[in-house]
Amino acid sequence: MSIISRGFHGRRAAPDKKLPPGQYETDGLPVLSAGPTPRMNRDTWELSVTTETGTRHAWDWTALTALPSENPTVDIHCVTEWSKFERHWQGVSLDVLLADVETAAEYALVSSYGGYTTNLPLEDLLDGKAWVVYGYYGEDLDPEHGGPVRLLVPHLYLWKLWGGVDGATNLCSPVGREGTSAPEVEAHVLDCVWHGFGADTEWFEQVAWDIGLAALSPGRRRLAVLAATDTD
Image (cartoon, rainbow, N blue to C red; front, side):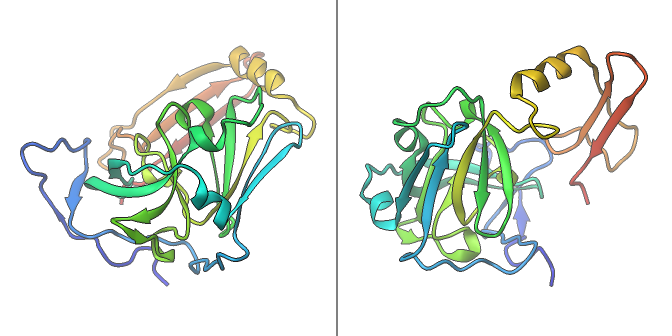
């Protein structure tokens, strides 16, 4: 089964629309999947937020849709190079969902019913930057596009915005080895020497999804290198 399906037909953006580097505008809404599309029953679906202390907040479908909703109109971009402008969604702001959540965490781990996870700084989820959406152009969000509920953080590329969302965990511990606290990890990271690098190749274009990082340990005896690209 291909992980890329219908909708990949690109064209140049209109003059009044600004495409990020390397992107093209598409007429369709492409579907990507690394496995079978999860299909959840709304009667049993649940969204939960668990803090670093184990405190859990949860909403079933009725409770979620009873919360004050918004209708954001935003541009969306995918690392597979397509973009769509002024898309109309309906959902609940993360500011509403996290209003009563007490946490000292700076990051959240978001999970989906398909088993995928993504981590984001909390600052990317607050102050009107993110929504849990369940509607698209006045219709229910279908499973192929992340329904019944997906995360929408339009200032980030779609690989950070999982469909079929079922929960978020605030990250403090464990991080790294078991029992390591976030401050310990942060201190270690700050002790390392970090370098960003590019590559003189056609496939490494140094755009948002091309990453080159090298970290030298404090004792300068170990070197970790990450090079990643989504360019075909």
